[in-house]
Length: 622
Image (cartoon, rainbow, N blue to C red; front, side, top):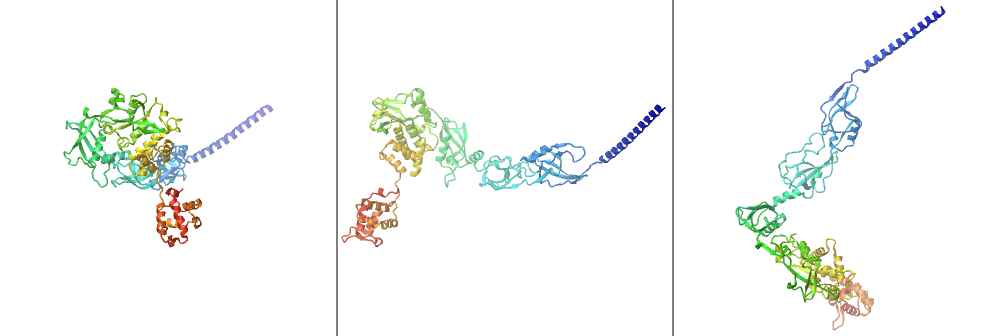
């Protein structure tokens, strides 16, 4: 019975426990259900302003993402990480325009935004973007006049300054404005660190707008130069003179480099003819004349004129040969000098091959290539490299020949940058040779025991340089200094200077008084110093001489004292002042001007004696 009682007690307790647990579980479930019912309350969104100022620019702060909608089940349009990247971006496309503003029922404020490139549109927490000033006024360029390297990138506003208005202006499509000059009046920098200029055409004020500064250049652009050349050119049709119905070619030519002479309103006939001949170089045709049909002033045209030029097809009568003068150059006293007593006899010049002869012939307006001729005919091993004549052997000197050629006004120094066969037919090319005697032993032809032959050609080369400079100086234009600069550059190149020539003069041991050309060159290189001829300065110098140094006229110290006092003064003027103020030849004894009252007559006489012993060089400044 006790056993049965225990079992009943156990079962009762178990049932009671189960009931308690069931009650607790039921209460918990009811509580959760209540909580769920409260959380399910819907969050709403209300637009507070649907017409925001669209000229305001926003930039990402990098703190929040962009969503497709502000509340509810939404998706990410731009992640927070991407927005952080846009916060540091200089790309205009990464800026935003906010066109709506709203707030959720929880009080969270959002902007509805669109990126400048219109690829992103959505909602962002209002702390996720911030307003920025996207227009910074900057200084205009130092030179506000220039050209546009690109002429189809005009905007109504600096590109990227704000969301709207970033489209290109097409107002000037089809207009030829490549040659126009533009003036900058405003400069602005935008978010992407690009600077934009507001430019206006100087040729047409209606052509204006904002352009990227990288497209503005103070240097004339190729397209502008080409357009300007076309505008300033004379438009030429070349017609065969033998068949006036045959158009050979056409071209725009630029007489006188496209500019009239001062005061002129048209090109001269010489300017126009020179431009035509240049255009016809190597064309196979030569200039025959200008047709005046329809244009009586065709021979002296204006910019933009249309002119018909008659040309003749080249034939055998147009072929001319290049002409040469073979200059003998001897080694005398260790340097080159023209050989006046003997030269290369014409009959001793070797015959050329047929190909070489043809190379020295060409149509008058074909270009002549001196370097090719030198390499094919005069170079080592070629026909005219070594010539034996009159018991001597002559060896071609390439450097001397080319320097003389390039300095000659008829050839390399003609200002045309081109030498034609007509040039080398009418003017001889001087081919320079060194003359060696006694079995070609050059050292045996010198009488100077100090000639430098340890370094081959040192003294000779220096002399050749000096002579080439003298030739170039003679043929150059301008004043003495300009001619000297031209001569030095022709011999030594752009890095040459006065010292280059002075060093060669010293090394060559040339007598610079040998002829007028050398004298002229030396005079320009070493101009005579200018001496003071001001009589007041000279009187002061004379009066300032220490009178104790004029006790006699023979003591070296006294002479040196007078030299020092008169340093830099013109000796002839000094003597004139002495004669005018100190009558040292008067029959009644020496008489002196009152302005030199500190000197006795004896001192005046000694001073006069010292001055008469001096040379102008004694008074040269150090």
